Image 1 (cartoon, rainbow, N blue to C red):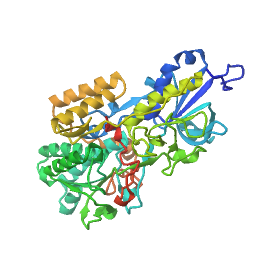
Image 2: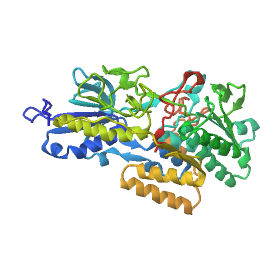
Image 3: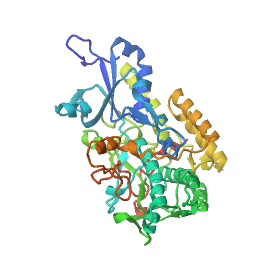
Length: 500
């Protein structure tokens, strides 16, 4: 083990501090494997693993659509980091800057905000940059104020509550315009996130109409807007066309080669001239690298991702590592010169194995290995008992593809605890009827008490999307709308854990 000068207090022996920035796929899996590989060093106090992450859990994003539809409990979509990484030090905070030349990271926590002491600085020896990606928007009028994202478990459950709430509004209003707007749902982005979220929620809403005396399934209007000429490009052109046919057969309006121009004043305006009064615009059209990358002295490529080598080291920099969405890693299996691995979870999870091995080898003076994995296919759900898959050259659709989708992701969700709970919920959901309850009050748990205490209750939505008491959207913004002339975007599949 390479020694350093990091000691917690005077008189303590030096130890190597490995700082992992991010608790998503790459951060969690890398820390987990390092925890196992360095068990002896951690026990002797020769090494320390610190994980800085904004949330105390890792979200398994492929399950977000099913959580939104009520097939899986939200708490089973996330993996608690403190339980899994019991040999690591977990810091719930937000990294603000990295000065690798000085080997220091600056971050804030909830405690620093309460104390008013400002950001905290931490020294490290080995740096693992795994902040992932965040949502990005285009300057479309009304989008930042009214759009709903679909990248976090909070957004997924908020969207579920919102859809059911719109059906309640439509059922009780006497104004036909309000009713039509409430029952119109616009999804922008034809990747995994958009298609699977729309398909699952449409399934749920269609089922829920049987419990409304004045709403029929055909009253619901679902619109999918995609800038490219096809959806789900990862499953291949043939399966993408099948997905379009399947969605249109369910009365879902799929608009290809179409852009969202505006969503002001509760009206979604498309580039083909169509106008849809709506209270729901869901934006799932891409991502961008986490902002922390721009606040470092590490080399970035033209898309703002870390410039990494095939060994998952940051190019030209010692003791710095990167993988996943935030890293541009050379794709050694590609025929295209200079090609980088796609920023999806298929690569991210596999890269962590090589990354952890290389960090341990570096600390122990061993040789480093290169990452090489050929993309073998993808699976996608189109709602209950429906799906598409293109794996190892084989194309599946309908129930077999849906079954493969579930089996694959059940095998990939971390921890036996989560696997067992998800499987149990799937089994129970097959035996009992769907849950169609909206728990929108969870987003504002103090609303009733504020009203009882003489305050003013004003926590409802303000049009398209989910609003807060001050009239702003209560969502995290989601990705960019991709225009055809821009070509392939590294962030075209923000939830690409679907790859097998």
